Amino acid sequence: MKIVVCPDSFKGSLPAWEVARAISQGLKEVLSEAEVVELPLADGGEGTAYIMASATGGKLIYRKVTGPLGKPVRAHFAILGDGKTAVVEMAQAAGLSLVPQKKRNPMKTTTYGVGELIKYALDEGVEKIIVGIGGSATNDAGIGMAQALGVKVMDGEGRDVPWGGEGLFKLEKIDISGVDNRLCGVKIIIACDVQNTLLDAARIYAPQKGAKPEDIFFLEEGLRRFTEVVKTCLGKEVENLPGGGAAGGLGAGSVVFLNATLTSGIDTVLDYIGFDEKIEGADLMITGEGKLDKQTAHGKAIIGAIRRARGKPVIALAGEIEEGLTLSQLGISAAFSIVNGPITLKEAMKKTSSLLQNRAREIAKILKIGGMLYERT
Image 1 (cartoon, rainbow, N blue to C red):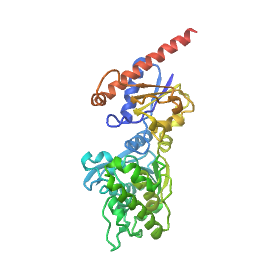
Image 2: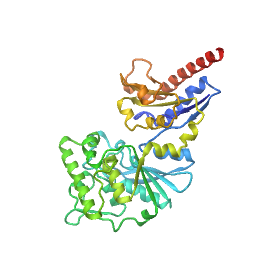
Image 3: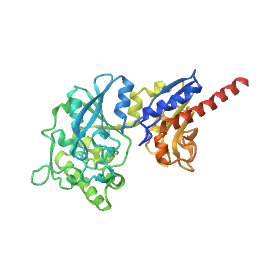
């Protein structure tokens, strides 16, 4: 029997590779003869660089960059096994997890550190840079990133606009003549699965990043101004670009400043970890995430994997499963909560690894019984 274990992270509790390991351990306790393949997932958010580096025999490189609040943070990017491709994870430099709850404010948070990570990747002499843009704390359309790469982003007096979404509101001029010229010889791929356009970014996502109701108007106006100035100064139109609103407009900003191509985050990761090859011949796929709900179908990593599983039976594990969810519509054969009794969320998050292992062990017992019954018929 061949089982492919490809979960997403259980956010706030375990990264995807630890989830995969816990499930694998539970399965092997019962199905010692089974071939269990661990393929942790990411779709451009946290963990993307690590997962792609691990799958390709690459490495992580650590550097100090400017965090979303303007203070230094330790971040990493990956050089993949081919030595020619870098993976930059914006969440490392401008992620929501880097900002304490009380300090979340997309009017102030910046993508400057993302530009610094890209510069460090360029220092490695790569030919391609994949930028995963999930999990952002920002709404600055990538102007911070652009400033770090040498672009002048100015107000009407020719002064640099301030960091954050408030900088967009003061934007009047863009001068790309000083941009890092190494970008011209490098292919930039933006990995994301959000299809919203630029002007959707503030209304839909900024509240999750700490924006107050009164801030939304200014953030929307700032994004609108960005589209106008980009058209006037650079001759580019990004207002209706699908995916342009990803990461607070970093999707659009990457097209403007990096000449980047927007692609599916989950499909990019699946390609690099060899998913199609490794699912070949599998009898079962086991996936999982923290919560299975109606949002699961809209761009979440596990759905991307299920879509490419070629009709294999799929079992999903989750901390919580929304009542009334139609699993068959998601391509899921069966789903199980890992919680085995009354327990607080805090307790469950502390015990996620053991809960996953226990539930995987029980699933393995059912599979073993099923195999025994089949052999008798």
